[in-house]
Length: 188
Ligand code: SF4
Ligand code: SF4
Image 1 (cartoon, rainbow, N blue to C red):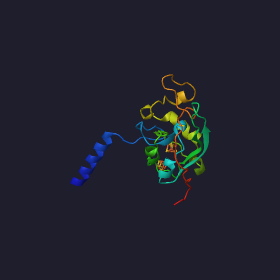
Image 2 (cartoon, helix red, strand yellow; image 1 turned 90 degrees about the vertical axis):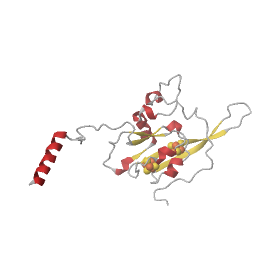
Image 3 (cartoon, rainbow, N blue to C red; image 1 turned 180 degrees about the horizontal axis):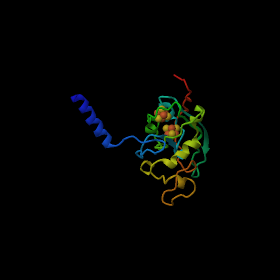
Image 4 (cartoon, helix red, strand yellow; image 1 turned 120 degrees about the vertical axis):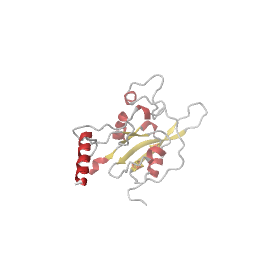
């Protein structure tokens, strides 16, 4: 009998406490702003160095680029080469959200955004191209913005005079060394 009353007392206490769960999708969850929901790409900061693709444990980042010659800025200077990004894709059907790609990026080109509701009926649509990854920048919290970045609206054509956004044209060419092998799904 004692055990029965103890059980009933515990049930009554829990009932009075109220629920800790949220009824998603009828209620939207209150997530911390730095939640790991989706990876955003700031394309103008990416130098196609391939570090993120090489370090990704799931080999789910696909990058293609080509080299362009930048004319010398001063008379007598030498022309330099810079990488131009053609393809940057993340396959979210493989990604395990470890964040290694964001940690290793030396150029502040990848960020977490808290959005998580991008499930798809067709698994092929979980491959986000660089345009789609770029739209997630709108959702990156201000506290995570890199130096000089003034937000998605600025990127779309309203630059701050104090902090002009870096672009593929204004960014300093970076010597990234010899071309790295391109990762393939299933490569060991
Ligand atoms: S979060 Fe991890 S698994 Fe996902 S793309 Fe980045 S490195 Fe790869
Ligand atoms: S590590 Fe950063 S700069 Fe290098 S390819 Fe990846 S996103 Fe671009």
